[in-house]
Structure formats: structure tokens, C-alpha cells
Image (cartoon, rainbow, N blue to C red; front, side, top):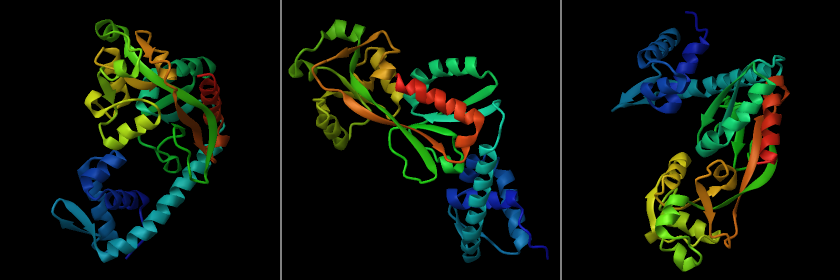
Amino acid sequence: MDKRIDWTQARGFLATAEQGSLSAGARALGLTQPTLGRQVAALEAALGVVLFERVGRSLVLTPAGQDMLTHVRKMGAAADALAMAAAGRADSIEGRVSITASDAMSAYWLPAVLVELRKAAPGIIIDVIASNTVRDLQRREADIAIRHVAPKEPELIARKLPDMPAYLYASRDYLYKTGTPHTLADFQQLDFIAFDADPAGIALLNQHGLPVTAAMIRATSANGVAVWEMVRQGLGVSVMVETIALHTPEVVRIMPQIAPVMVPTWLTVHREVHTNRRIRLVYDLLAEALERA
């Protein structure tokens, strides 16, 4: 029997094993569940072994599947490395470049930078991955990342950029109704919009000199765009990096006596794709824009 491995089938097996179900694996690969199911079944038939057992709604690896997973992960790493090396040696300044940044940076700051990029390199197509989750550049989930945490992977190149100051802001309409706060007591009578209401999050705000109390929090969202829109619409006050606030003229800074929260920023790219002309062009333009942000 021919035991050669089809990489498409092996990749389907890997996604299913890592995601825990055919439906989740299909979403990760951008396939339909029946297509992925056929790939896994074809691999089992080619190998003559059962790779998964169904437990409830989940798939659990058999002993043969566990052994297979170790080898397929190595195949996946090799495939990623090959794709990375090929991307790093591409000479064209036309093509797609993916950038991942926080949802708020993607919505309020990045578009103006992309206007500059369009003028400099109209042949480049930008894919913006607006996410507050750190994307894996080694697995090519993005080409370039604007991060607020330093990368630890040795394969990544990170450029430390100036910290971004974050201040307290409110809309002009909200302040017209409540009055502009001048003291901490005034501030604590306002409605605060938080990224979460967890006590640890409140404690972190307090450590940065922001006198937020649990009683002040009237709305929360883990989505930065949602938080900022609630501020813009006059629902309350919140903290935001100045780079974003400057693009929202109807929102003004309050409590200037409170020191800013300094948000660290790194521009990160994989070592291999750093030699790609179009990715390098986008990387350098982003670095320049962040330097002056």
C-alpha cells in the first residue's frame, strides 16, 4: 500500500487535532466541514489507521493519531519555514501585505497611514487584521504587527518605538451635561467606560494614577472601538491613547493634572520577511508614522 502523505490531508488532520473538532478546524483553514471531513477520512484510509475517536461533540486522538500528530507538526513547521523563506526573497513591490494592530489603532489611526502608502506604492494591497489578540507571525497569521508587548520569539525582529501617552477623555456633549471635572472628587461623580470591570483592572488603573472606582463603571467592552464610540457618543469618560484621540475632534482631554499612562509600542516582523521589498517598504512607512504619532 502507498503510504505517502498528502500535505493537504495532513494539514487538515493537524487543524482538526489542534482545534478539537471538524467545525473548528474547518473555520481555521477557511474550509467547509464536509471538505475537511473528507480530507481526514482520506488520510486515515491512506494510512490504514483510525486517527480520531468521537467523544460527545469533540474528536479525541487515538494512540495512532497521537503518534501522527508529532510528525505532522514537524511537517507544518517545515512548510511554514519554506513559505517564510520564499516570501523573504520576493522582489516585487506589488502584492499583499497583512498588518495586525489593535481594533482601535486599526480603525482610527491606521487608515490615514494607508493613504500615504497608497501614494508611495499603489500596487500593494493591505490586509488589516484588527485584533487585540497577539497574532503569530511565525505561522504567517500576519506579516507585520503593531504590538504593545515585546515579542519573545528569537525569529522576530522588533523595533521599539516611542511610548504612546494615554489620557482621560470625554465628549464635549457629555461635559456640557455634567460639567468639566477639576478635582478628583468631581471626576469620581462621572460615568466611566472600562475595558472590563474586573477588580484587577480597576487596581491597574489606580496604579497609573487614574482614580476610577467600581461604582463609576457604567459600561464595559473588551473592544477598543466600542469603548471609544461610547465615549464619542457621550455615554461617559474613558482612557485612550492620544494618537487615537487626536483623530476625534468632538472628544476632549479632561483632568490634565493626572499623569499620562505610557503605552509601550513595538513594530514587529519575522526575520525572513524583513528582506521582502514590499513588506520592508510597509514596515518602514509604519515605523516613520509611529515615530511621529
